[in-house]
Length: 59
Image 1 (cartoon, rainbow, N blue to C red):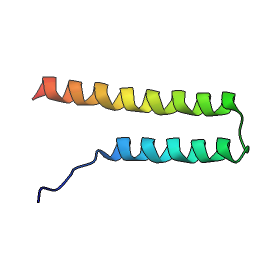
Image 2 (cartoon, helix red, strand yellow; image 1 turned 45 degrees about the vertical axis):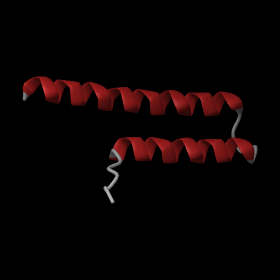
Image 3 (cartoon, rainbow, N blue to C red; image 1 turned 90 degrees about the vertical axis):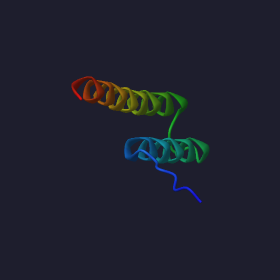
């Protein structure tokens, strides 16, 4: 059976999304706060993609 490799930043982004979704579901944060958190996750993922592209260009 092949091992599945999960990018660390994607894993942490998914975990953060789940944390935010749970907080919204429990009414501890508003929809606006959830959307703001998602924006931060999306920025982190884009930074990771840009870093990988730049690394690939260098090699």
